[in-house]
Amino acid sequence: MRVLTNRVFKSSLCLVPDTDLVDLPDLPELEVLDGPEAAGDVLDPLRARVLANLVEPGSASSLAPILGESRQKLNYHLRALEAHGLVRLVAERPRRGLTERVLRATARSYVVSPAASELPAPDPGRTDRLSARYLLALAARMIAEVADLARRADRAGRPAPILAVDTEIRLASPDARAALADEVAAITADLAARYHDESAADGRWYRLIVASHPRPRPQPRTGPTDRSPTEEH
Image (cartoon, rainbow, N blue to C red):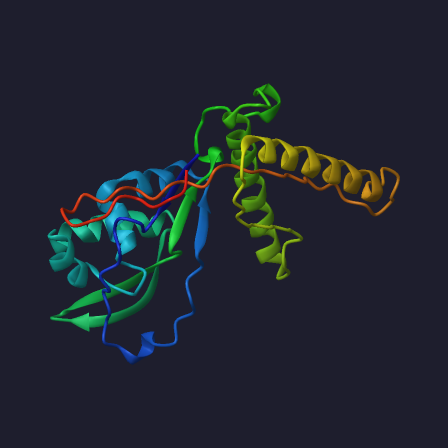
């Protein structure tokens, strides 16, 4: 499982001065890629930079001075990205006797699903439940399943029946962490016992996943006047 965003390639806006482009819909924050060709595109350094700079509409001509590449080379990569569904044509207009094709990325960030690889998908059932890799295996399975669910919901024109809760807490000690884990496990078991109905004729199976991990510490800066990280231990 790989997560790729426009993190290090903060978009230099390739704005095209065209009034037809001002009413474009907002981009989705995230798209999950489960095809090997599209996954290979976002792993390619140049194509990743192209995508990062197409959060706003642009063309090979507008990208060339930003990326330091020729229009011909960028046109080649743009055609590949378009063929794999990562950019979309939003306008065409004449330019010096040619047709300038204005494109835009299909999302701001991309996640590569385990389904994009020919390797077997991670199986939580084969993973030590007390290891961090168990959580990773659950996350990988969730990405593949929820991406498929979201696409089917989009095609049906209705929201996907999902629930997500995200919060941060500061625990005083390992004992507090253990107590929290015991209490969360007990509450989860109680909820499952109360709401599970094996015999419901119109029922539907859901996955309920509860997870926790330490929050990452800020990366130290390298500038001579920068301070050390202040993240708590």
